[in-house]
Picture 1 (cartoon, rainbow, N blue to C red):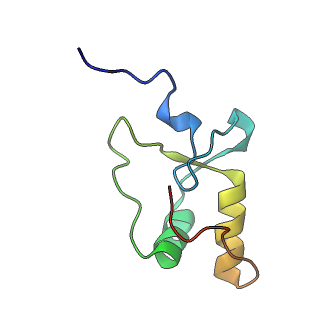
Picture 2: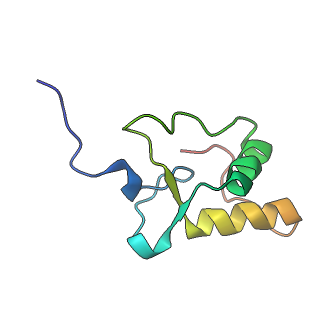
Length: 80
């Protein structure tokens, strides 16, 4: 019998793994994907899988783009 998750994967941030409310969800744009690759050292993957979130939270977008501009950093070094 297959196990089914009660929560949809897009309820969680791809980067930090936190539960996000609908108004705080952002799409993984090419800019965010590029910043993610530059910060963590590997590309965004498995977006075609049903179990992978395809969104991220507004805070991660803000922190990554600020890091790319040289003003801030992420509070963690390894993504969830």
